[in-house]
Amino acid sequence: MFEPHPASPPPLTPPHKGEGKTQAPAASNDRGTASKTSAARIGIGGPVGSGKTALIEALIPVLKGRGVNLAVVTNDLVTKEDAERLRRSGLIEPERVLAVEAGACPHTVIREDPTLNMAAGDDLEAAFPGLELIVFESGGDNLASTFSLDLVDWWIFVIDVAGGDDIPRKKGPGVLKSDLLVVNKTDLAPHVGVNLPKMLEDANAVRNGKAVIATNARSGEGVEAVADMIARAVLFSE
Ligand SMILES: Nc1nc2c(ncn2[C@@H]2O[C@H](COP(=O)(O)OP(=O)(O)OP(=O)(O)O)[C@@H](O)[C@H]2O)c(=O)[nH]1
Image 1 (cartoon, helix red, strand yellow):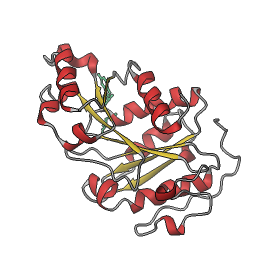
Image 2 (cartoon, rainbow, N blue to C red):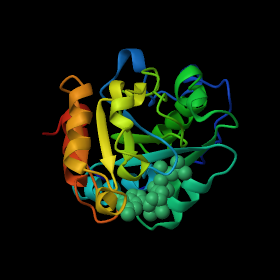
Image 3 (tube, rainbow, N blue to C red):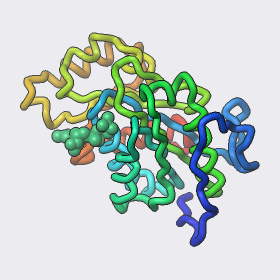
């Protein structure tokens, strides 16, 4: 269940490249041998501007309303912009948001060498005992980005209708391999000449039965369905 964060949480040490699970405190998990005390870790990736942060902003109140004890790790190229935006939002205690500065292609730190993100997740678990869910937001990338399963248990790829209705047909690894494909900005479809039902049909056609959900992250449409999937897939609460 959701617990208010401690009055004086232990200080968060900034993660350093190269620090991995071995230096994590006892409360942290080990992705290979998931313990019952460890938080589920999910990824949210997708092209630049598709609405990853907006989806997280919409998900936080829904998940908190369901009693989920959660935290977020953001990834930006050379800034902490997304983390600052979430900390300022008032949606989540600022201490529950950590930023990783990738300093390289965003997919490098979520796939090739995710140790920086793993360490940030471990820091959050140490600071917030009872944490149930950590959301890792990738920096905006291209259709090829995927998450390492050393870092996350399950991941979402977010595309948006304004990016073009041909994106599902291009079959990038994010579209094909993610556990959930979110097609965001459905409200913009009429304005950018996109046939949304056809785009969703194309997305379903290439995903081999894996889930596709249409959202408008600004109005919240579709966000409960995304939360349902997270709950079923990694929280085992539904
Ligand atoms: N109309 C509309 N705009 C949206 C929606 N979701 C996000 N946006 C807008 O799209 C822009 C980009 O959204 P972000 O949430 O910053 O996208 P992002 O994927 O996190 O962006 P990067 O981190 O830069 O890759 C912002 O201006 C949002 O307000 C939506 O469903 N509908």
